[in-house]
Length: 169
View 1 (spheres, rainbow, N blue to C red):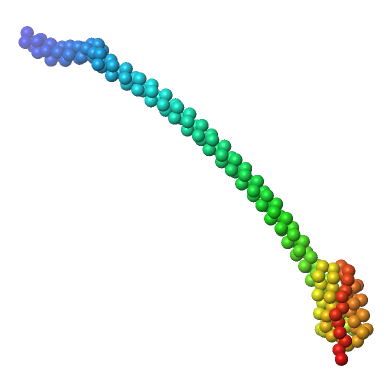
View 2 (cartoon, helix red, strand yellow; view 1 turned 135 degrees about the vertical axis):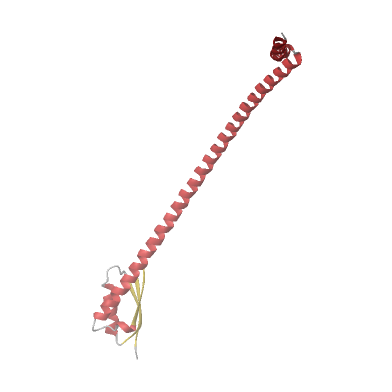
């Protein structure tokens, strides 16, 4: 009999204590209040997290809208600046074509002088500004001045020739 009572004591006692704690725990008003407070706190925390998420989402949306506005402004400024650069580029290209044309006219006139037996290419300076040519230097005679002017006028693109040529003495 002692065997049964040791078995009963060692097995049944903890079981009874566990059941009693379970029953008392469920019925204990302090434990119930604590459970309810934990539940309320969890609900409030969940709602606060949702509100915070909504607030962050709204702020993020506003930030994204501001970034888009800024990007559009920058894009417009770049485009406007690009147009300005493009216009300046066109002006520079036009000026380069003009200068190239002026150099080409001067070179053609000098080449004609070099081929001519009546004109001394070494003594005549030729300056071209747009379609206007200025001749300067010292020549041997009046006929050389006339030939220099006629050769310059024969070059395509030349509209006017101003002679500052002088006859050597």
